[in-house]
Structures are given as C-alpha cells and as structure tokens.
Image (cartoon, rainbow, N blue to C red; front, side, top):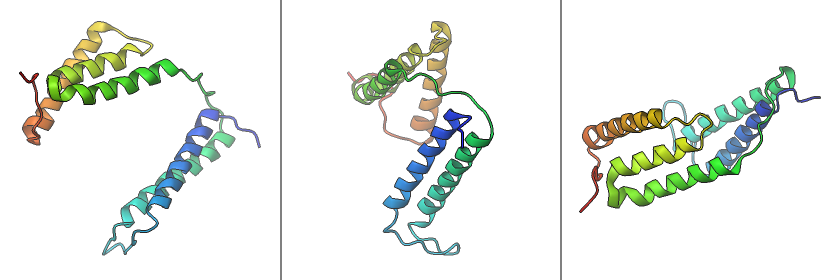
Length: 148
C-alpha cells in the first residue's frame, strides 16, 4: 500500500482523530431517536459524518495521486494565533472596528501575496459586515468605537 496523496492522507487521519475525540466526549449523552432526538444525537451524527469523510480521504489518498505536504512554517501560525489573542484583548478597550482591523492586517501580513491596499479594503468590508451583523442585526452589546 503506497500513499499517493500525503496531504489527503493526513487530512483524513486528522478528521478521523477529531471524530474519535467527539465520539468519546459525547459517549455519556443519550442518543434518542430521529423523532425524539436526545442530546447525543447531533454530536454523534456529526462525528460519524466527519469520521466517514476521513475514511474517504484516506482511501482516496491511496488510490489517487495528489499534492505533497507543504513544509511546516511556524511564523504564520504564530502571527495568526497572536492576532486572534490580540483581538480578544483589544476588543473591550479599542472597540470592534480597531480590533478587527488589527486582526485582519496581522493575519494577511503573513500571507504569500500580501498587498496593503487589498488588505485595507478587506478589513473595511469585514468591519462593515461584522458591525451590521453583530451590533445592529443581532443587537450584541459590543463597543464599536474605542471607549473613552
């Protein structure tokens, strides 16, 4: 047995692993039936679908060729994780607009095709969308502007 698509293989292994963890975590919930679903019905269904997708990916990686696994790069992972943590720290004192802009700029900066004008446009569109959805449509009590 030869793995022809290592990227698909490792994705399938990861999906099967997450499915196993979800099945283990939901083992204490009652399943119920399709007509009267219990608290374990949906997690079991999703974990089963995720596991089946993982098995399909593993099988596909053996039968069909694909891309090799890219070299693991630590800097993008570290910068994006830092940007997410910084968003959580900045949202209260600086508001949604500034913290989303910082998150978007930092996350896009580590990309291979970083362009400042496109990133600023993306940040502006993301800010408008998030303010419209979370503040106005859902009515969440978020600071939009920095608190004085």
